[in-house]
Image (cartoon, rainbow, N blue to C red; front, side):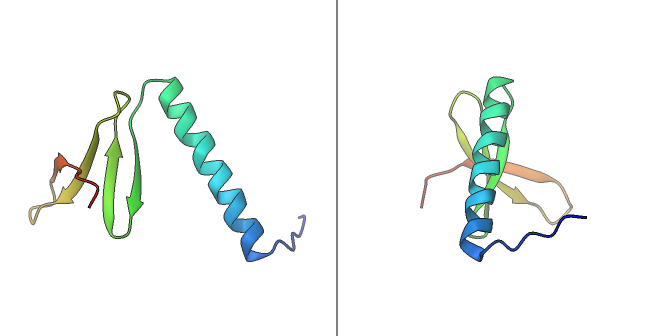
Length: 69
């Protein structure tokens, strides 16, 4: 198995590039994708809508428009 001695900054850059690639692939296939901003889960749809995903007490989820705040 190969060993990598990447710095934390290099790992962060690898993660950023992988994230951008995955998001672009989702867009290319007209699929939504999720990510977190702080403790908030955001679902972004192909049409550009961003929804905040909230877990209900019964284990179901609801979405509300994300205001960016």
